Length: 165
Image (cartoon, rainbow, N blue to C red; front, side, top):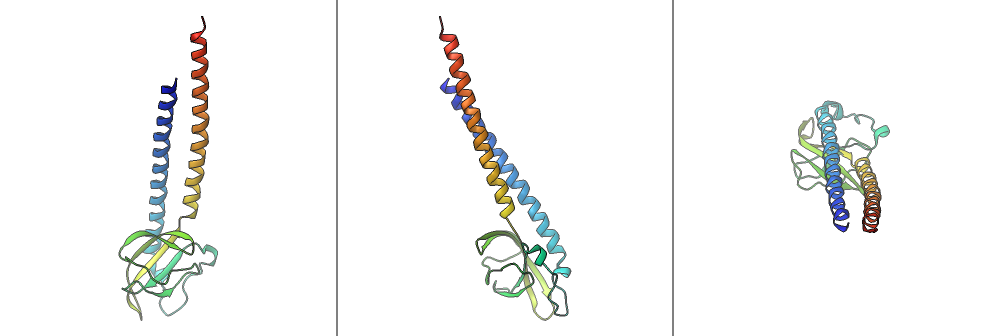
């Protein structure tokens, strides 16, 4: 009986880890697609002529900023808080923590009138993704606990029935 409960535990653990990893990968991929789309719209994000840029006040979750080649912030286009300096900046997607929130950040070189070559940084918070993954983890733990309890109860009952003379 203990062997069957142990095998059930292993199966549930493997299935839960696969589900968690698959969902995390899918959600990260979707966020990367959003970042790539936003980065391609850099003409909208960085208007010429010195205007402030798009109004992100309704979507304060998006980070948009310009950094010099050393990673120092030169211009903020969004209303979300941006760190003053980014290390390891380059043409890539990375994660960044700012003001207690983790962001998925896409950076790349752009030419900006009056500023020359700059790194454009576009970021999306991972708050929703992390909350979804946390809910999934708690759900898996609850279902796993119930499944283990059911397997143990059924196993116990079968042993009692089979051991009866």
